[in-house]
Image (cartoon, rainbow, N blue to C red):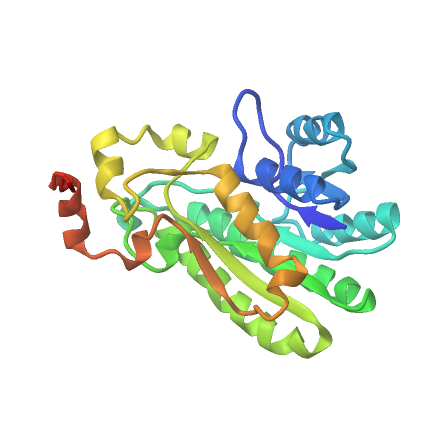
Length: 263
């Protein structure tokens, strides 16, 4: 049984959380679809049930401690146990630090970092009670490298998520709770589209694959970390970024090279 936060979506787009919830359901997990907007969660639940999967809606604002506590309680009450927590809920604002009011910074931290902290606080005892489980925190490659865009509150929150991931992995590993992080790079998604489209020429230069990823790339990586095949992975940071975090500035010049014809 898995909790996925920020798992709602609005048609016709499919967000990262929605994709994660659907992939988990396809793999046989019951899913508690958590979103601040119940209508958005309902779209995801309907998509899962249309494929024969099991899912229920949970309206919750992860920046609220009481909502996080109630979310975990609802999962255990409805499904009898908790096996996985996916902390995906997040917000961002592209504002330079000198123009960032304190309330904006606090709002981003409250959802992205504080929400992850509180969801883990209430989920970990239930994971332990069930014999162990998996937490995957959805971070971002902006915690490792400059993205070329100014969003200091978002970057700070995602950096904090990495520190929290490692700390919890160390604290609870011997109780069979694994904690890992997935760091999406440039992903074609509704939230990316709300910021602006990425020109094809820029896509060629952004990473080693020369293209954007999609929400299913993130979803499958997240699901893998919760499987028995990943049972020896904890405190692992997995960029899903087409090689962007390992690329040098010269990598972009490869886009200008013509392929060599082979006889």
